[in-house]
Image (cartoon, rainbow, N blue to C red; front, side, top):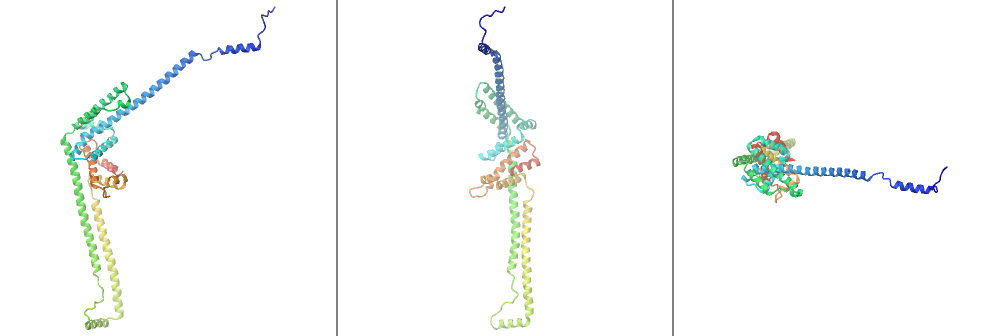
Length: 369
């Protein structure tokens, strides 16, 4: 017999009870969610640290690269070029040009390549390379220590003046003064040869010009001295009349016409000859001028020509080299060319790089750009 214990549960009660039971079900247990979050957070933190480390490392490596390059530029300048410029009493502006020339040289040749080459070329260049490596280590390790101490990058990468001062002092001791004077003498000789050649060119061109001018003047004088074929009046009075009557009786009208025609033709022929002769004189002058200007010339001369061409073509340069009188200051231009040539002579004498014809052509080409 079936027993009924109380009233049957209503549909509403069943739904209410089921909803209450479902609320107690946790599809994502709190313990599992917490572990997952920890893993995700740990991964994100690791990635952030890795990115931050890489970013800091890249900054440090860039700092190290810049330090080595700047040390090499300053090492070359204070060891080699500045003593030569000081011998010539160079101005501050000319020294800045020299420094910029070395910067360009190091950037083009490559810091590491130059240091490797210096180490194997001569005792002087090897000492420059050794100084660079020594102070590079001092500066970069000092910066790393500051970073480890918690200093900012700005403070850590601020190179101490005492390190730079010591480096410059050591650099100035590398090259003997005798070598600097030899280089300076070679530069002075090149400039003196350039000046002598310009004097000779000017004298040769003046001779050619005067010769052509003289010929043209002679032709002009000859043309002015041409006289009319008709006879001059002679004396006044009866003698003149008798003379004219005799001439008129001696020639027929036809003969007079022929003489006039011949005179006109002679004038035309002579005029054509004079013009042709003048043109020939001008042609000979231009030919002689081209022969003078197209002669073989020195490296310094080629550099000066290239520099002059650039000054005339580039407005910024033209403004920089234009004097108060509105004309190009060629002394200033030659002095600046001398600075660039001085470094090239330093590089050649100490064998910093192979200064061959190809290298010189490329360098002169850069002057024109």
